[in-house]
Length: 331
Image (cartoon, rainbow, N blue to C red; front, side):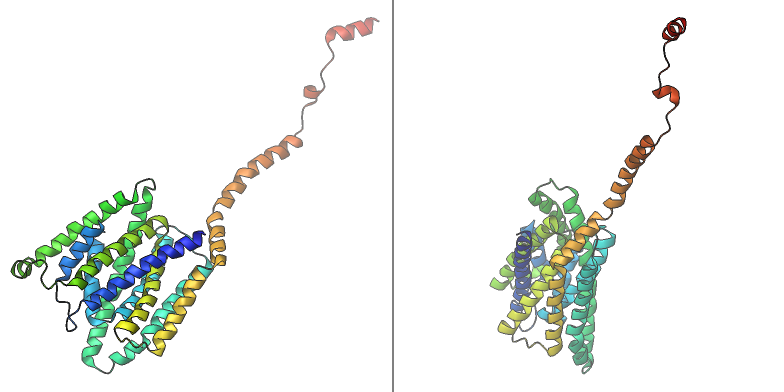
């Protein structure tokens, strides 16, 4: 039942993550985003009421989508799980079983496999090569920043377990509003000339709403689950993005992309396999076993020493009273 709730929460978050990227693609006019991405990101932070890093990542997503398609961006974003797993293990001090490590390794293999055809295509054109290289570089920067922000967000949300989730979200995303407001100042001249809502459309409003709800669900996962569940939600979003891109945007996945996607599915299955959860419970319980055994050893030693301790004769053999010895002698 607990696994079912976890998967449902991850699936809902994945749907909104997937819809956010697709809505950004749908809002393009002649392949370009007509509106100011800074204003949209600002509104997203206002509606979902993370801080500076989250604001940078949100704006960076628009830049990456100028050079790469939505499905490719979703796959690249799954590299986040590798760095997140390292931070999850060594910063948050959470254990990872051998099966979990295998699943993470398969995820990296799947991502590299799915992108192999992109590198071949990039070699045919210098301009295309530069665009792909720039898009990949920006995506890697975004993955790194996003991983660090997610780990910090999980630590912040779980540090005060009794604090209401909505109040914590208000604090976190309130700083996001402030940092995005600084971005508005950089585009102040164009905003004054064209207006805050210049070239907005119905798709733009949808982008704001969908990304806001998706952000709230991701924060909920960080609060009640963990970062690994969060990044696997991105994996599920990648699958949905690929499927819907094939339907609505004439995206034709290559054989390499299909193979990589299959490896990602296997990775998700292994990571959430019951054996992995059992191994995790053993790892979580192993640090306590030495302590418990050490606590029990002194008691055993005490019993051992008490049982075989040599007791002086005068303690257990009471001497006869002086008066009784005298009376016996006299008798």
